[in-house]
Length: 318
Image (cartoon, rainbow, N blue to C red; front, side, top):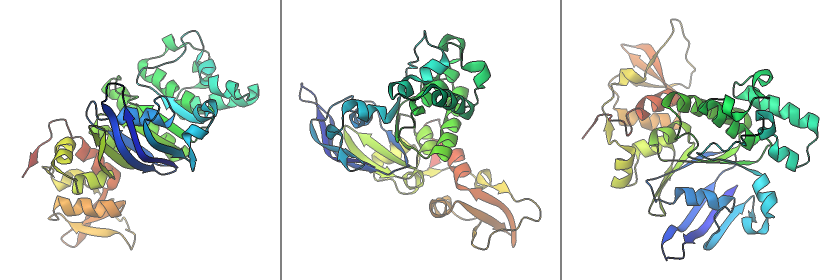
């Protein structure tokens, strides 16, 4: 879908923001770029829609070099969401969402239907919100509108540059949940920049960790926990072994629940590292104790519990 081939960005002063990046992002993937300040993650994102031009190498979308696309065609087919909520203050919410569909000459009925569909998708009643101005919405509501405006013309790709970092924790958590639900329904190719490993672990199908313009590791969230590439990755993820009691990850099994025949089982004494390895392969595993099933460990729930320890003072031990 999106392929970087020996891509570099060198600024006039001779410094490299990105150095010889090779990367492939799959169609329908939620791909997260993360790293410390100055790691090159935002530059990498902005090269996809040519907001920053490459110095060396090539970026391909659907087998075609981005330099071969008409710039308007390229950008109209790539949604873009910024950290700064960039709604037009003098326009209504419906008019904000309709900007790109109007540029693409959609008819008015189609645009109106799309506006209502997208507002409903993020829990904003069209009859209440379509005619309001941005100043009448909370920060979280404005950012929801920013997300669906980027989706309005049904682009294949959605670029998101630290879109939730300025929000309060409650709004941020809600927007993350909204994005997971939107992605479940629409299956867009999403490239998402963040500096927060907890957010990356929650959202990403795969995560690309960068440092000083270079890729350090590209892996699934489970692989970052179970197989970090080096000490920098371990430090950034924030843990070697989690001081988590296995019971914290278990959802009790309802009485009389019948498990699928292929469900993988563990015991309460199973090391956490082995549990993570199994969760990398299976969506859920059952926990046995005394010959009985006492509960289920779900991959998403387990990652959510463990991510709370990341970069938030969670305990670790050698």
